[in-house]
Length: 300
Ligand SMILES: [Zn+2]
Image 1: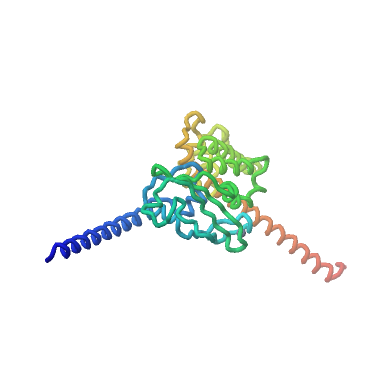
Image 2 (image 1 turned 180 degrees about the horizontal axis):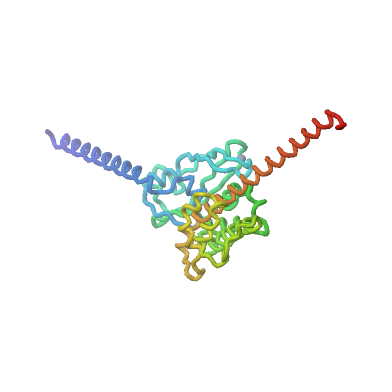
């Protein structure tokens, strides 16, 4: 074997090894994707300025250079829609041919359009020092998340509905204690309203106001959603003083308490609609009964 042939074979072996290494790295990064937020949750649920630590080329390539598609609530259509990008977003950091272009520090946008009517959603990202963060979006998280709760507005009067939206907005900016305090006010208001309803039907719970939140929920078990009552221990956090709460605790409890509020509102809304339907049925029955009576003529 000549030196030239030997060199060529060594070269080929090096190239083969390199390709194998790349394939293994790609596989490892693909396997690691499930530990990272999906593109949809990054855009639609992740608070602004809440960094995601990543060096995954596969992940960053998906975000910075590949077509994007996800389902989301469209604030323009008022219903869920498929969102897709229309333009090639390019690497955002020079030629997409450059090695590891997706790891270059820089800013990029994900712009997607509602496939029903072209409504536009824009998300702005910054990547540097292995940190990916979202620094802007239109419409806001509050607007997107606020849509699913709009139907509860009639159940939360006296400004409480505005507070529920504000809580979601503050949380979307990573504000833990502030957002949590709003949720807590709403939760306490709902619990107190449900006790007032019981009181009106003569089933008041003695010493209700002084009970701990967990016990209040237990005392209202007949009028609160069963899942909430079952997990009432999770809401003991609502009895601790504001001074005892820290940002991280508030942030981690936020989704749990928000979900509980939605659950209560959903059950109340259903009850309200059932009562309305029952009342309409009664009116209809009375009307029919009246019609039957008058058809039968006056009683002699
Ligand atoms: Zn739309």
